[in-house]
Length: 319
Image (tube, rainbow, N blue to C red):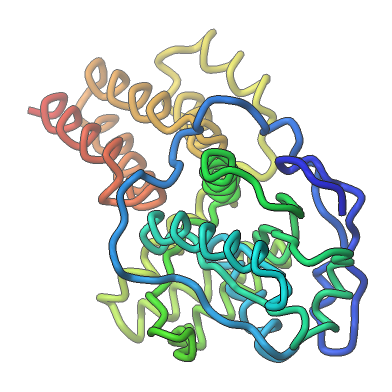
């Protein structure tokens, strides 16, 4: 694995016994590297909570890898005999903690779990790999400055948002011995279906979860995200934009572009488009667009500052 911000695409972890088959190859994310801190990067302030979990067995690795279907997991593979590598992982932990549960750090001492290091083809005493939806993306394999780590984590969060992997993780108890609470069965079915690209089955699983527990917030959010994935999977962005530009009052055309914008990370563009459409529409159309906008709010997250801002704009547009 060569070093560089998401630029090392030659690392192709090989399946070992009990290592998930999804750990195969790293996507080429080198285009995401840049000097500016991306939107969604961890803030500069943090607390005493930790999101670092120790991984010492292939069974634990399997479990944590599956959690990457919820949100990004960063694997820090290091030798506990190399103090520089240990210090680098501690620095990474501090920055991951600042993300407030949007990233889980899985710390693997390769001296204790050499089979995991072999699966990731770690050659030295340090290797850091992001995993989203079961797919690994190498980040770096030697100590780097905190500013570069923060930029890389911002890129991980940006990619996670584009992939609709924006769940959150529970804090890990001191010492990293407490395992995250397992997902409810229907949520597990939904996540497995999403990984297979079967969005209809995922939606059915979330609906079943909501029938069992109507107040299940995570199921409601998951259903909204799966709905978005279903709507955009066969859309062509250029054609959709052309249709929306030529037919500004075509509700379906405007909704389609808004979906694609949210899926691509252009959240504010999507919200502004639909709010402008509400402002110039009749009552029935307002309701249709409002419902879609509220659904997209669920996808992005109720506490996201862009959602908070758009909610205010929506209220003004409606009243």
